[in-house]
Length: 247
Image (cartoon, rainbow, N blue to C red; front, top):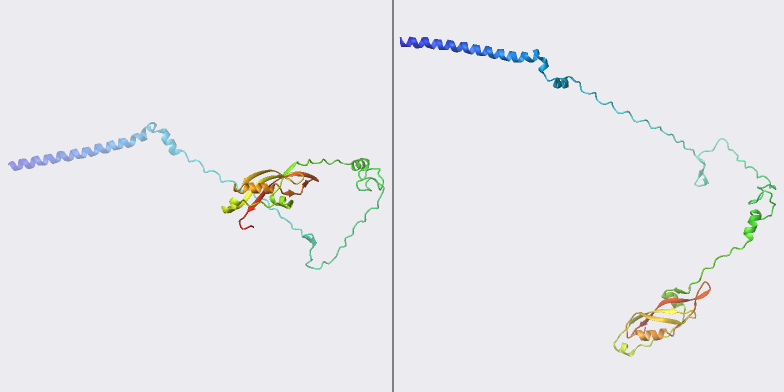
C-alpha cells in the first residue's frame, strides 16, 4: 500500500514538471518573436544616422591624370659643308656638274665720299685721314706725363754685388781666431748715389766678428745705381764670411 502511494505521487510530480517546461519554452519563443518584430513595426526607433551611412554610396574614384603633352620632335637637318677646319674637304665622288664661281669686279675708284678709306664727304685723294679734325688731332703733340723717380730703392744682394767695384777683405780678429770662431756677419747698408757706403747696421753675426766686418765694408765702393736715367740711393744687405780655412 505504501509502495502504491509512492508510485502515484511520483507520476503526478512528473506530469507537473513536463507542463511547466513546455510553458516556459512557449513563453521564451514568444518573447524572442516580440523582440524581433518590434524593430520591424517601429522603424522610427532605429538610428537614422547609422542607417544613412550604410545606405550612402562611396564616392567615385578620382579621374586618372591627363597624359603628358607630346614633346614636339625637332628634326635637325645636317648641311654638309665643303670646308673642314678652314680647308676644302676632299670630295667623296666626282660631281656631275662643276659650278664656276665668278667673282664680282671691284668698282673703279671715284671721287665720292666713300672713295677714300677714312675720308669725309667732299674730301680729295691724298688728304688727311679723318679730315680737318683728324689732321689737327694727329698734328698736336701729346704730352706724356713723366713718372717721378724714387729717391731710394731696395735691391737684392745679387744686384748689389754686380755693382761692387772695390772690396776690402776684413781682418780676422786674433781673439776670434784663437777661440776658433767663424761664421757669417749680415749687415744692412745704404749705398749713396755716388756708390759709397752709408748707415751700416748689424743684422746677425758673432759679436767678436761684427766690428771687423763693419770696418771693412765701410771701405767698399759701388757703381751708381740708375733708375729712369737718374742715380738713386740703394738699400741692400751685405754678407761677410769669416772662415778659419781662409776660404
